[in-house]
Length: 102
Image (cartoon, rainbow, N blue to C red):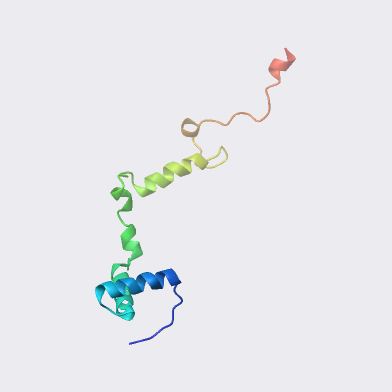
């Protein structure tokens, strides 16, 4: 068994000692159990945990469709993907001087 030193705040040590007394165990036994439980309950495969996350929260749209829909907002008139029927045209940057001359 390996040994290691750890700095623990005094209030946590007091709570640890109270827990050890209540359970009739040593401080080391409580810490060993805590480490074992932490490792057993930690997420070992973060990538696997991410699959299906959207469905879990009620999203039904395909991820790529969602990305493409958001990216359509970024398309500008000079982009090859620009479709005026979809994006609309940008307002003219120069004011129309025809009305000023009349």
